[in-house]
Each structure stands twice: as structure tokens, then as C-alpha cells.
Length: 114
Figure (cartoon, rainbow, N blue to C red):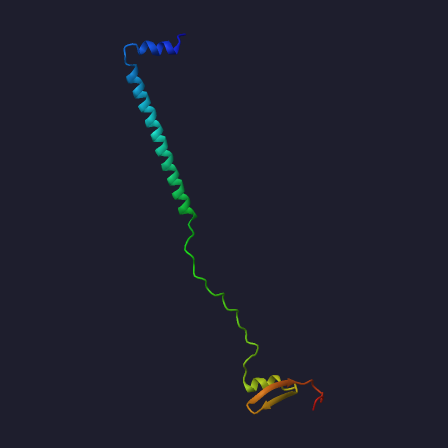
């Protein structure tokens, strides 16, 4: 096998050595420049992607919680229905100057409080 240094010096004996060195150096500078530009471009792209992905979406306006369902604590009925249901139940109706202020259900057969 031959020594690579001897082969290179034999190939460059015709005086083309300095020109070869200049072209090799220019090529090396170009490769470094392309790598640097590629790295800067990749960094800018990655940073832009992170900023776009990490951006919070639109905030929905806060809506008040739904109101709880209101259930009536009384049942509307006609006077006839009331009299039918209370036929055997003694009831004391309390009135004031503005109308009925309360109803007290008494126990059947009891005269307590009267």
C-alpha cells in the first residue's frame, strides 16, 4: 500500500497545490455557513412552533351557573278540593287584618288549645 501523503504530494507536484488549498478552504467555509444558517432556521422554526402551540385559545365568557330548579312547596287547588280533603280533619285558620296568616292542622278528636 502506498502512503496517502505521498500520493497527494505527487498529484500536486504540477503547481496546483495552492489553488487546491484555496478551493478546499472555500468549500469548508461554505459548509460551515450552510450549517450555521440551517441551525438558525431550524431554531427559529422550532421557536415559532412552540409559541404558536403554547398560545392559549380564546377564553369563553364566564356564564352564571344554572339556577336551581324551584319546586313549589304548595299545591293549588279549588275550594271544593280543599273541603273534600279536609272533610274529617279539624283545621284552625288564623286571620289578621290583611287576610289569612296561617293554618294549623289539629288532631282529630282533640280540643287542645281551644
